[in-house]
Amino acid sequence: MTKPLEGIRVLDLTRILSGPYCTMLLGDMGADIIKIESTEGDDTRKWGPPFLENESAYYLSVNRNKRSLVLNLKSPEGKEIFIKLLKNADVVVENFRPGQMEKFGLGYEVLKEVNPKVILASISGFGQTGRYSKKPGYDVIAQGMGGLMSVTGEDGRAPVKAGFSVADIGSGMWAIIGILLALNSRNQTGKGQWVDASLLDTMISWQTFLATGFLATGENPKPLGNAHQSIVPYQAFESADGYFNIGVGNDSLWEKMCSFLNLKHLINHPNYKTNNDRVRNRTELIAILQEKFKSKTSKEWIDIFESHGIPAGPIYNLEELYQDEHVHDREMVQSVPHPTIGDLKLTGIPIKLSDTPGEITSPPPLLGQHSTEILEEIGYTLDEIERLYRNNVSSTTQPQYKKQIS
Image (cartoon, rainbow, N blue to C red; front, side, top):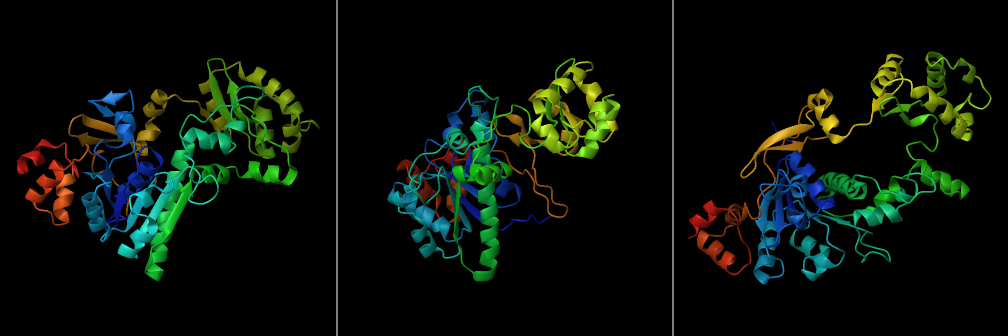
């Protein structure tokens, strides 16, 4: 079955998280991803623990469905090889600090002169323009500057970042959207363009109602722990054996909940009748509900809420999450054979397409695993490849390839 991005070749110069996540999802959908690495490899190859047979779990998490080519872009021959690859590429993705591609002699002006149809996607901390563009940016910096940490956690406590790398992952997703838009535009114009995604822009774009509220009133939103700024009750509550979440998103659900909780006197209470009332009087109301919820276990409450059509759910750790049968129904855990690890379990593909679904076809590559293969594809002989390896222009960690040129 043809995949949606089959025939699209991506030169992947990224490392760490935002860029590799972007190119992994492109690879899931059929694009040919050539992961171009220095002789030391992607930084995350060394990040851990945990390691699986000397392979970093961090690296393994975002690098499936790619081929690895070691290439020294600082050398003239390395740059020459990249230019040869560029001539038949559709997309280049990089997440260096702005200006680094120009230092390699591979800035956008050079790329589009070689291949006017190529799309360059750049992911950075602060974008390609603006006074902060040259600053280094990591996920935690973007979460802090982007306002997320100011509304995460509990009022009066230290700022807290999200447990997932949301700025990195979100920027990778914006880059994917930009690439797909640019590919569609290219179908109409025949020309490529430059996609510019940044971690700080991502955090700002995700503020949604919080940003609009501030811009309208000038009032800074405060952290509310597990609660919602605009909906009450919509948060985690303590049960007899732990915690669970509920989402009472409208007044009709509020009336239902009060009825089965034997709190009918609250339905038309002037402090709680409407969501607006409940938001203004959240402290008193949450105290009343919390006392009620301590009488049963989380599962008992979730079953009761669901039986009445009110959203409720558990607060899982990862062990509990991956034991849930629904996660496996959705194929969000998949296995792929790895050359040194054996059966490698990875998270599944989040985008479900009915006719042209994505697929995990190959594990994250070993460093330089495909160097010989890719160099041969662009016309290098085994003798020439041996010379490139000797001169540290490229390298491979694959013994079977080394035997070919010995």
